Length: 78
Image 1: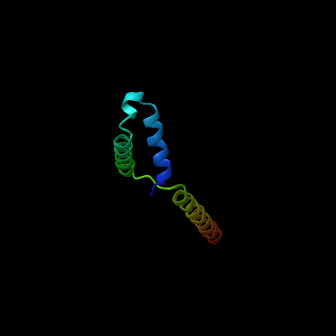
Image 2: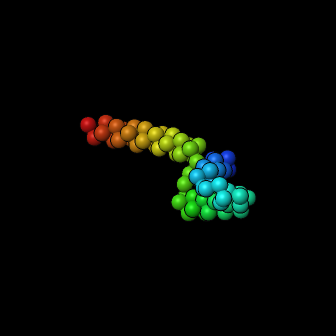
Image 3: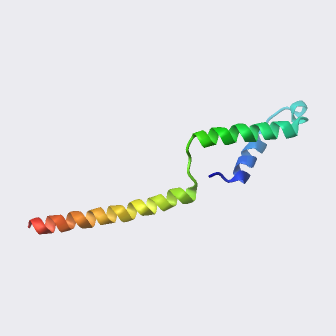
């Protein structure tokens, strides 16, 4: 669902914003940030860009079919 490299980049930005003394516990913080972010994002029910684009295409094709059917219906009424 998520690109792990993007999640790692966000975790890294969070880490870099911490004071130097806290950065000494880098491994624990990175793992904790990664876990917390993974859980939070999974609860959001997000989709990938590819999944979104695929659904946009399906919707466009469906809309075209509905419009064609509406036109056929209007033509048969006349």
